Image (cartoon, rainbow, N blue to C red; front, side, top):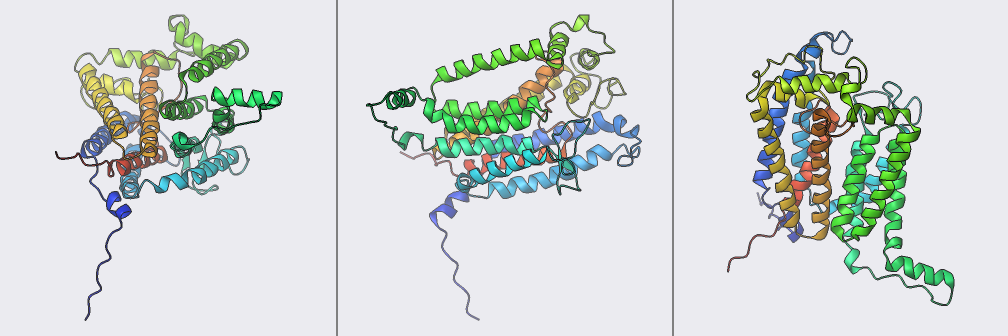
Length: 409
């Protein structure tokens, strides 16, 4: 038999098969492993007393499902890491279009999967299957779309309009100060954020805005635009505080928790604080939390960090925060050494999303910011969200494969 000659790899294929960034990968696996252990500890009692048909008093319900999603997510992360990240560039508009369509479907009765009248979930197969939040897809889709467009910013020519008319002179001025450049990005953000905010899902919209802002800032957009838009955002929050009882209530609980009835709006805050304060320096020990027995609301989800501190203590909490800090810093290191601007902007957007989620979740648990309802990455229960997070990590690993090797002098 005649053996078929092996095809030589193209330059693009050779680049995509470079080594993964091992420190970044090990930090992901370490945080995921600790997260699964803590989820099992935090969710055991909640699942045991849950009489719904899906759970049926099974104490292993949450950990079994989360572990299955974690395995699927790791497989997905590996597959994504093997894709040449240059393909993400042409996929970006398609991903953004899919995300917008899914967000629109959230408003269609019969196709959405509302929980407590909140329309932020869909079923995987629209009418059946596990639920997920399209806003999770929108976050990474916006980052990819902005990175794909802004990576060509330095090579694009400045628009020129006639100086003979007032309109032309005005357009030239707007182009000079960078306003016209921001218009397409502003339109995308208005559409995406509007669809997310009115689900309602304010925390999801906040994360999308943070990821988009990070990509815009690093691409070279003038800092004055961020100061102006930030001031406008603060003004809008002030208006919402004055006109919306829901927002005003959240700020009152945050600013004056001592004046709020612990059994009313301040229940979650105070139970989380009790859990953290009872952990001490070294904690009660893994599995020995008292507050997870029906006191801390959703100990397996948004409030899981309070259980972490109670069981592992201040030392264990700082260790986990140190691992998150190392993961984030390593991610930015990959961005600094990326092969091109598209890779750099993509990593900056993804890692900023991760760091914002970690900061906001822990800040809510400790009372540093008002309650935003943002889960802790790799720890909080949510299978589809975990899979999307791991896919995002796969994108970063894909970009790390093509980091140029250091030159040998």
